[in-house]
Image (cartoon, rainbow, N blue to C red; front, side):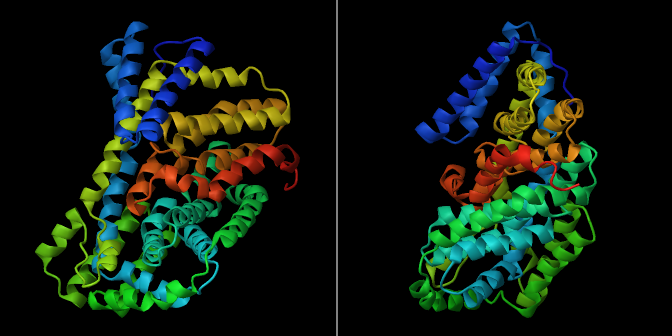
Amino acid sequence: MFPITPGHTPKLTEAILIFFAIIGMISYFIIGIGTSPHIPILLGIMLLIAYGLLRGLTFHDLQGAMIAGASSGMGAVFLFFIIGILISSWMLSGTIPTLIHTGFSLIGGTWFFAIVFAITAIIGVSLGSSLTTTATIGVAFIGMASAMDFSLAITAGAIVSGAFFGDKMSPLSDTTNLASTIVGVDLFTHIKHISLTTIPAFILSFILFAILSPDASAAFNNSRDYQAALESTGLMHWTSWIPLLVLMICTVARVPAFISLAISSIIATLLANLMSGLSWSFIWNVWFNGYTGETAFDPVNELLTKGGVNSMLFTISLVVLALGFGGLLFITGIVPAMLSSFKEKLQKVRTVILSTAATAIGVNVLIGEQYLSIMLTGETYKGIYDKAGLPNKLLSRTLEDAGTVINPLVPWSVCGVFIAGVLDVPVLTYLPFAFFCLISPVITLLFGGRLWSKIE
């Protein structure tokens, strides 16, 4: 949670008006004008600073809130740096080219989007990280879709859906552990309980992706050109699977994400030097600037030109701005005023669940950080659930259904910015097709009140 004490307590109507004004402005700039989200977030920061000054806050306090907000995301920022290196090192070691090449060989000509969704979900559960899943197997799948001229929007929607299914259901996931811990629920009790809404959402999503999948027979007949170009890079070896296996072993062993990604990246880099004979000066340049494809087949060059620390700077700068923006929302009292108002008018089970989901979604939209949406909402509603005689497992499930899966659908959120960057598909482009992320909160809102007592 942000270590920020509100410096002002606005009335609820005032807080809501400012909330809708700022979100409306951000949405207009991103959707209506098509600007980079950095611009409206910066404008939002300026507006909140002006509001704070008008309400008697000092600039020193406002600046401190921005710094505190940004500081809360430093863990993610350093993780983004290492993911940029992971992608470039996996290119050099042939891991991502091998995944793409193998995908062409194994995936048949039908149900492409459904298979992408299912495989990404399996990998997501195995790795326990939606961002790592997206940056590895997701990059390979988006490359295949591009090669076969399939919809990148639907493919990205399938990748995001699968990755966040894994983020919800994996016992290795940070958000799954956080949601269960913050409200005091056993981890596996939590996972059992969220399956009541997650499994139906998975099935519905799979059916939708299967219906939308094109007849890929003709596209796969031409896939040999892509496979031949991948082979011509000289990067693919039997050792190309090792970085992926190392990452999965580290994940199962519960090694922290940063260390796991760093180990996999270093091993991939060593293999690139040993197996492909790449010079160290070239390798270090790729670590920073990313890999550039240089085959005789331009479509494959586009698939392989990815990664590097430099590719993460857009994402990192936006994350810092968004979290600083969130800090201002706290110091000015806007978010605390809206959260406290929910606590006073909750009696019925359905209303409690609806308000919990609305709060988790609202924090995601306002602040753009899924951990904060879980922590803030969990801390706010624990007492309400106890007072209403509702089990904490209902709260932890709602936190996941409306907190974890919403973050990738917000263009200025940590996950949204990252995913749009690594897949090169804007959030608003894949949003209508991220079926699992859209369906999960709907199921919770429609059936949450009936499902809470099904699993004891």
